Length: 77
Figure 1 (tube, rainbow, N blue to C red):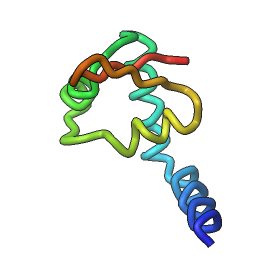
Figure 2 (tube, helix red, strand yellow; figure 1 turned 45 degrees about the vertical axis):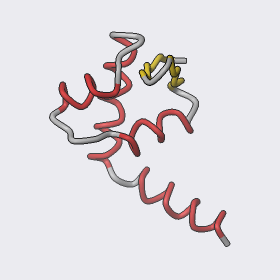
Figure 3 (cartoon, rainbow, N blue to C red; figure 1 turned 120 degrees about the vertical axis):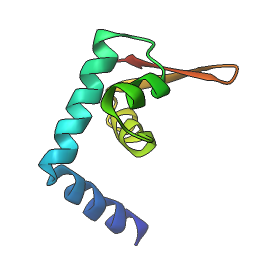
């Protein structure tokens, strides 16, 4: 049953053009500045947090996350 719920959620996310546009913008920032920190993405886009959006890009295989100590850096794949 969980797989069905995830599928429906993925379809809902793909059907949301505003969310997809924001994902594209985040991906462009990561490509323009490899190693960017999540806090910098949030600052540039005026977001309080972008965890779910970043996780989506990681799950899609477009971005990789590297942790060094407590710091997190994002790189395009």
